[in-house]
Amino acid sequence: MIMAGVYLVGGPGLSAPEDCNVYLLENEGELLMIDCGCGLSVERIFLNMEKLWLSPGDIGTLILTHAHVDHGGGAAEIVSRVGARVIAHRGDVDALEGRDIVKTAAGLYGIDYKPVRVDRVVDGEKETVNLGRQELQLLHTPGHTQGSIVVWGDFPGGRVLFGQDIHGPINPSWGSDWDQWQASLKKLLQLKADYLGEGHYGIICPAQKVQRFIADFIDEE
Image (cartoon, rainbow, N blue to C red; front, side, top):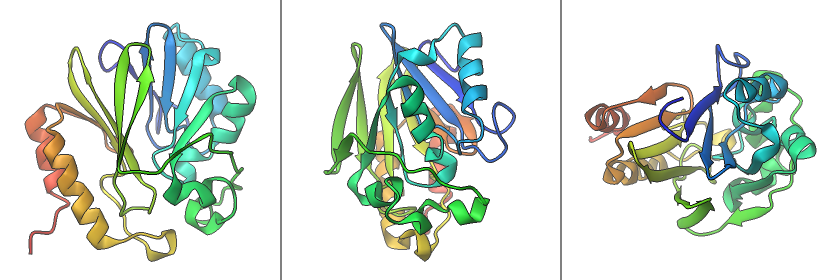
C-alpha cells in the first residue's frame, strides 16, 4: 500500500518482468485500475489484490494510459473476467482495438497483443472520472504516444500523479513526437504532485524529487 486507497499490485518483481507498474485505487468499495501489464500475469495481479483483501470482481474501471502492450496487454482478459469498462484517449484507440498493432509495441516484447474495446474515449485535453467520492483528473499528455494520458488526484496523503511513461522513450513508429513530449512534461511540472507513480520507476516522493525527476527529461536548450 502506498497510502490509504492507493496500491501497487503489479510490475517487475510483483507480477511479470515485462509488466509496467500497475496501480489500483479504492474508494467506498469501488476499485479502479491504472494500466494492467502485458497480459502474461493477470492471475498474479489478481492474487496480489486478494492478499490486500481487495476483490478483482470489484474493478469497475480500467484506465489505459497508452497503447503499449506492457501497459494494456492484459486488458482483454481483465474485461472478460470481471467486466471492467476501459477508458483511453482517442489517439491510441486504433492501436488498443487492434487496428494498428505496430503502435502497441508488441513486436518489441515478442507478445501476441489481444485487442480490447475502449468503452469511454477521452477526446479532450482534460476530463474527470469519479471513483466513489474521489474525483480523478485525466490529462492528455501526447509525446510518448499520440494518446498518452496521465491520471492525478488529491488524496488525504497528498497529490498523487500516475504519470506512467514520463521517461519516454521516443520512437516515431509508435507515433511519438519529441516536441509534444517536451510540452507535456512542462504541463506535469505545473501539477506540483507530492507523489509520482511512474510506469517503470515506481513511486517517487516527496514533491521536490517528483519535480526533479520530471525536469530531468526536459531539454532546455
